[in-house]
Image (cartoon, rainbow, N blue to C red; front, side, top):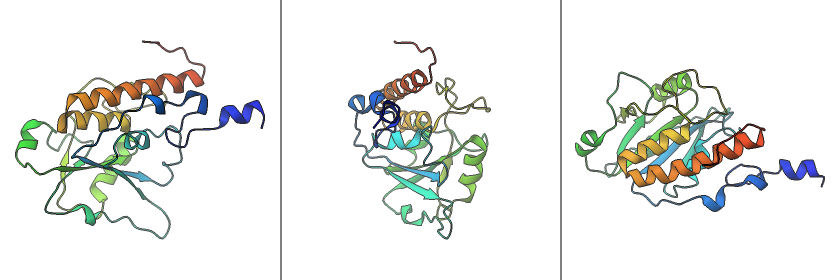
Length: 202
């Protein structure tokens, strides 16, 4: 195995190049909130997809793939009396996810997160089968994305990892958000560093 192939080998868990693996710094959060990440099958293999990394920190969560030929995604199994389904949706015409909204229904939350561009996520959110009774929510305004690897054309656009972290900061605790964002910044530094970009070392 040559030098180039060794440097190209990636960690199966965090998807980073082996010599830039962030797994040793990865916390794990056992939460009441269950995150269900819905990704298009063409998006999942991309190493720039950040959502799968977030799930590695959340053992109570899972990935669902849609768009595969001959297979339709049905999320109706998520609709149970014991849990409240919130669908994270990037639109201005839905309620803001905040403590007041959460206090209206004390059941543990299943947070469904469409993974894609702003436009893809907005389309996906309204078409997901099995979520007729899900409540659409949006994140409150916040800092701009720190993900500098993919271009984000929408001013409020976030990496999927960032969106999950911010949502859990509201639903669970600011400590969970802080811990997740710390790993995210490390991953960003490692990714940009691998591309030869100058990065801060704070």
